[in-house]
Amino acid sequence: MIRFPALLAATFALLALSAAAQTPGVSRDEIVVGSIQDLSGPVAMLGAPVRDGMLMRFEEVNTAGGLYGRTLRLVVEDAAYDPKKAVLAARKLLQRDRAFAFLANLGTPVVMATMPMIVEAGRAHLFPFSPHESTYAPLHPLKFQIFAPYRDYMEAATRHMVQTKGYARTCLLYQDDDYGLEVMKGVEAALQKLGKPLTERTSYKRGATDFSSQIARLRAADCDLVVLATVVRETVAAMQEARKLGWDVDMLVTASGYSAQTHELGGDAVEGLYGVSVLPHPYAEDASPALAAWIARYRERFGTAPNVWSVMGYTVADLFVQAAQQAGPELDTERFVAALERLQTAPDIFGGPVYRFSPDDHLGNRHGRLAQIRDGRWQLLTDYLR
Figure 1 (tube, helix red, strand yellow):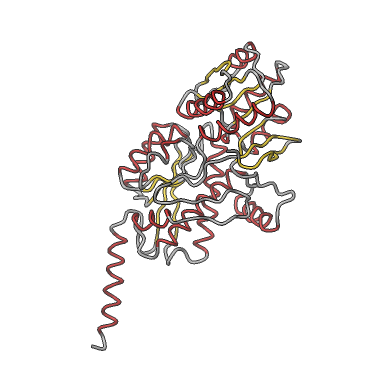
Figure 2: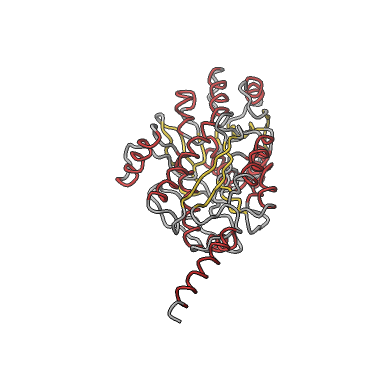
């Protein structure tokens, strides 16, 4: 009888270990998280800081003892923004690494190609860098998103710009894929509400570097606002082409172009560019003490200053940590999802939105803010647009 409590405790421990062994990516000592990034392709300048932000948060947790004694291991595969490579990367993470969940997969083409196979395998698909409606709707137990949908925030941003600036001829330059089409729907919805037409639209193929024909077409249409469904490099190239021609038209880019790299690469050519911001860029100047300390730690760890993509990578990793912590020591997908559906975050040092989920709503944030490049830095102009 004296030995019975010890025997019972050992039995419970073995049961917990057995349950963990049955959950892919969860062992007695480790939790494996997968991520598909672009580290060598056209948006590698975004993928690298996203990866580093996630690594930084996971390393902080591991240094503090992990989650219930388990270390977090982030396995990142480079798909180079190529859907075919992304499918191979997803298979590797599912079958060889047995990732418990997928975090922050980058790029709408990548997400559209891999999300179905990930959720079919029973793994959580968390906070992809693709504000596409399908990443959270229709409601699915394994799909969660925090980035406001392209269609919603570009409808609000375009409508705000046209109403406040009085533009008469709004046009669109868009990437010829799901990303661009979602932005187009938002722009068209905004203009329809205002009783105005979309004057001109022109597309480009993913990875394009020459925008001379597209800019010439938009200029010939006498556009006074050009909405850009572009990423950083393409945003810079489009604006440089316009300025080279002496065309000083106003341009508005999605959150995919809201990055310090845009003004670092574009210089004077991108001065005055409008963009949609989910959270402020972490400039060291005028940073709060807490943010300044975080910037210093990031710089020490990675040898470079963080940008907004670093912050977003850190943020999504922190959301994963919060949910896994609340799920308890016997981590499995069902407990993790239940914890995430109860999660509501507090304001953080970065000035981002409060994220909240529920069993009926897996989209943690629906809104963006308007910003503009002024004197070589992004400055917020509005609160969250609705």
